[in-house]
Length: 199
Ligand SMILES: [Zn+2]
Image (cartoon, rainbow, N blue to C red; front, side, top):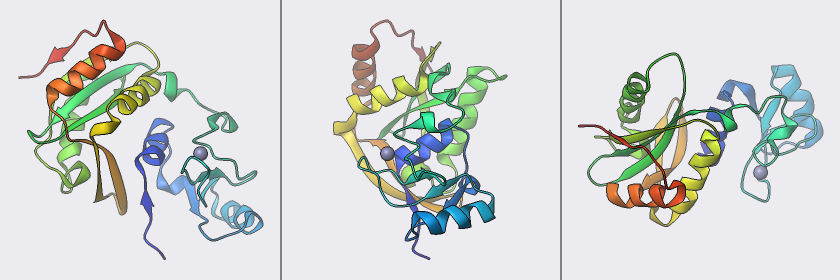
């Protein structure tokens, strides 16, 4: 099989909706009729097929609709509007802006876990030494705000391929900018950010 590279939009979407690779049948190269039958046999409601106009391949097995462009085709779409924390991580050379959901742990504990996973398996984007340097809480629209920040910082984005959890992935959240560049862009977007800075 051709090696599977999921892009950052696809992975972020999967993350946001709590979907894993197991939820998808690899239907690349298959017609709608073929994958409808095969995905059902595998117990998958979703398939990875050809690209939509916006560059996503995550589709419903039934209608073949892009679930990234039209999440309403899925029964659940809560995570996009959730609350949680937005963080800036840096390794001294690159930055990354990401989010963690609000959960039963304190944000500090959740962010410490995230920092560990950013540095696992050769590191996010093949880059190690990530430290979360600043974060703030948002009370709604976590996913939407994350998208707005990524758009605002897209000029700094560097694509890096890396291997994680058994798949090759394309990291688009590695930013060739300083911590101050990221802070400034976020302040400009949201104005009244209450930053917490880590030592
Ligand atoms: Zn799409």
